[in-house]
Structures are given as structure tokens and as C-alpha cells.
Image 1 (cartoon, rainbow, N blue to C red):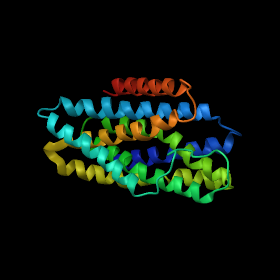
Image 2: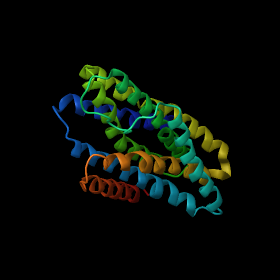
Image 3: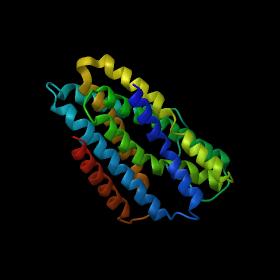
Amino acid sequence: MKAALLASLLAGLATGLGGVMIALLPRISRRVYDTLLGFSAGVMLAAGSITLLWPALSQKNGIVPVSLGLLCGALLVYLLELAVPHLEPHFAPQFTGRSKRLGLLMAAALTLHHVPEGLAIGVAFGSGTKGLGAIVAVAIALQNIPEGLAVAMPLRAAGFSRARAIAWASLSGLTEPLAAAVGVWFAGKLDGMMPFGMALAAGAMIFVASDQLIPESHAQSDSKSPSLGLISGFVLLAVLTKIAF
């Protein structure tokens, strides 16, 4: 439990790095940001498919609980999205403007999106598989940086100070330790249903990548840089997973 809470806390605080980038850099182009979103999507897809889903499928009689877990994970994220005002686009809706309400809604939306991420870390640590929790936490920390940008950008555009933008970006990730605690507890209760728990976390991450990150990374242009970012993130996490296991 302690390891899961610490790892999820560090992964959640990685959103603050996105806030720091906004504070230190005078301007981040849309193309760079879209590439980062693509990278984040690649990390999420690899974490879901390679790091979580493959070990779940390798366990005996895993196909039925894995299938159910994937569907339930996607449904979980879908229900969480219904709990907040719908924003189009999901990330960095505008780079300019002074809508404080929009910036705060973005922070609230992304705070809820950290719930399935924390759950994934908790389930990974609770599975007892050596190195699994650490690699999932690293994956989520990497993809949290663009999410921190998504929180800080509209807040800075709305006139918030650098310090407040960084603070909001950092605080948005603090739901992850709470969700991680639930994930560890859930893993302990599952006992022989660990494939279901791992697939649940995988389904949530894959849904986020497909429903939010990938469409938004291509929303502003026909550039191939988001796709290059995606494959780079996927390869990086595949290599890290191989090293860890």
C-alpha cells in the first residue's frame, strides 16, 4: 500500500511539470503540444496493452475476466466523463482568452480523469507482479506532463499567475493516490480475479487514449507529428517494460 501511494503521488505530481513548462517557456506551439499529446497516447496504449493486458491474458482462464475487465474499464471512464461538463476539445481548448471558468472546468475535468490512472497503479502494485507497479507508475507520470499543460494553459491565458497555474496543475493529479489506495484494496479483494482487475485498468487507459488524446492531437492540423509522438511513446514504454521484466 505504501509503495502504491508513494508511486501514485509522484505520478500525480508530474502534472506540475506541465505547469512549470508553461511558466518557464514564453510560448509552446500547437504542433509541439499535439506531438506531446500523441506521445502521451502512445504511452497509455502501451501501458494498457503490453504492461497490463498481456500479463492478464497469460494467466490461466483469463480470457473471460479480461474481456469483462476491458469493457468495465472503458465504461468507468465514460461514466466519469458524464460527471463533468462536456468540453470540446477535451484538452487545451484555447491558447488565448480570459475565461477563468473555462480554465477551472478544465482542471476539474482532468482531476477526474486521474481516477482511473490511480486505480491502474493500485491494481498493478496489488497484483504482486514484481516491477509491474513501478512501470505503470512511470507510464502514467510520463503522460501526466501533457495533462499538466492542459490545465495550466487556459489558466495562464485567463490571467492566473505562474505560481497559481503550477499549483492547479500539480493539485489536479492528487486524486491519484486516493484512487491507488482503492486499487490496492480492490486487488486484495479480487484474489483469483486479478486478470479482471488488470484488464479493468487497461480498458480505462486505452479508452482515454482513443477517446481523448488521439482525436485531440489531430484536431488542429494534418501534421504527422502526433503519430510520430505516439509511436515514440509506445516504443519507449515497450522498452521500459522489457527492462523491468
